[in-house]
Length: 168
Length: 168
DNA sequence: CCTATCATGTAATCCGTTACATGATTAT
DNA sequence: ATAATCATGTAACGGATTACATGATAGG
Image 1: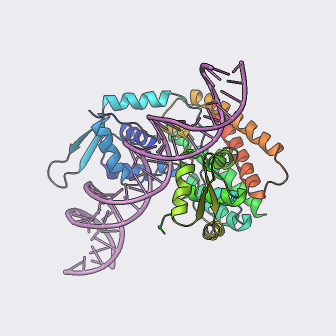
Image 2: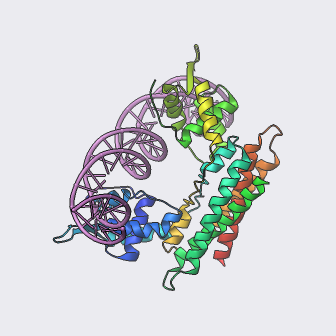
Image 3: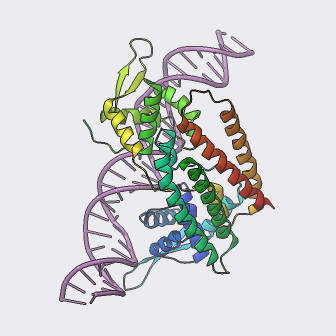
């Protein structure tokens, strides 16, 4: 059994497997795209390699479909559940980094008006998306994703205001 | 002359060299720590390796101190200036990712109250820092950093509100 | 003088990105 | 049938992180 370091990517995979049960990498990709991907994007390749890493260390188990495409199926193990729970119950004081390309350009002297115009538009579109998701969210969605979405909405509002003010 | 891909890290180094003139990696580290590092952190090792990469591709030039510690000194070249300017004048519609560890935990079911308590505190402390920086900023600081700081302040306010609401 | 801490780097590792490839489905 | 898109992976590369190491400077 190999030792690996668990990264945010690891916890995303573990969390999704816990939520959705046995899944293929492609199913995970779909899940990510409609949820956590809005604030933490992953390359699709990572959803193939990360479960493999996790399997090598016993956090998930891998089986293959009999016949057909013999796709890989992953399930979270007790060890995986324990690791996820430990991570979840540890509070963190780490702060978000505003790693926004536009903000970096602004910092280094880009023309605020031009930047702002593009950013206002992009952020507004994102806000509309978020509100649509919120308004059509099935009742059985757990509170975590709802709350995260709420944060996304607030962030978008703040960003829109900021860039609007810059646009003058 | 080697071809390299310019990353955000590259532009940070170029931007700082443009602003500060000839600098050692350590000086860059100090600069980052007091400015752009608040929303885009870098490992100190990167401030040694990145200028080297940039030098190999002609974006900066490298000299060594005569005698003493023979430290490396980097200066932005015309090529570097041009690349920086091209990057700066291209608008982007890319959006920030809210890659916040606490938000990820929340998403995957962590206890909101416990998380929120820690986050409120951390974000408040950060806000105080930002306000102190703003209030003691020398007059010769260009608008870019000022505006980026303003975004930081607004983000902190939104984050504090969000986590306070969660804390109930 | 001793010992923290600051300053300055190098090396190894590894995760994440990018590129490449091909098999299955669906639409026209 | 054919083209387009969806689905499913693998491989290579490179930037970022981590760990290691040592030389200078300042404080006690």
